[in-house]
Image (cartoon, rainbow, N blue to C red; front, side):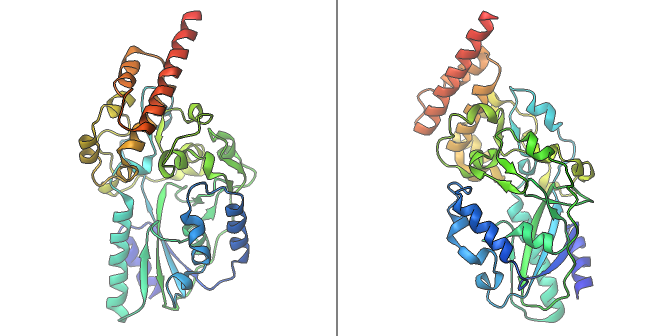
Length: 353
């Protein structure tokens, strides 16, 4: 059955599959999670604390769970503008490469359900539930235990064959399947991911302060972005890939074969001004089916305003910001006004020079 599951998994578009023991000892993982929560590193992500031990005890979430089937699927889209070139062009909007196409939650859950259907068709009824970043599941921990890779110092899963640019998904099941062996950590003394982080959110190996992470600030954070962090965000308007881009193992990252993850709306190389000009209807229409849409139009404008404030000063950018100076949203107005001040300061500096 285990062999069949891995064959079916590849046929469904997953690059690798592993199986771990849901009952295995993980007290050190729980201690680490609790310490992380006690430090407040989760910020406003209250759901991280809300579910308690369900996150580390699958049988508390789905009674009877014995095994976790973990899968990974590559997401790096083909024919994408070089990430560093976009990041270094202050007038462009950098969007994390996983979010350039269709929402991965739907894609992975659909494929995982098909895998579960194949399993039940083969053996009959069994209890299971599929997940893709959709419940209190410690995805990296289960993937690591199943031999799909190891946890990198940036806290993401790393694979010798594929780097880190892939999605993870799981099936919790009561089937007593044979488990796979974990693999060794291969980060060695490298700390490139720690050193490159624009906001110094990676406070040490395997320790992330989400409150400083650009992915958290632009996606999970619903309110105002701390003013001290805004200049450090640069033009990263949805997520941040710096720690992955600099990782040596990502030279092995493979381009995805999934058309759903291909670039839509030119988001791999779009200008900040262009995206900032979208009205709410355009936002909802153009980003239908995109993971970006879940942050909503207000946060989208907030993020773009920060990017425009960090861009090289120009009349084009100032005019775009002034057009939203009296925006209906207090959140957008606050960030637009900050951005205009930044543009003004840059203009004055340029005159002095």
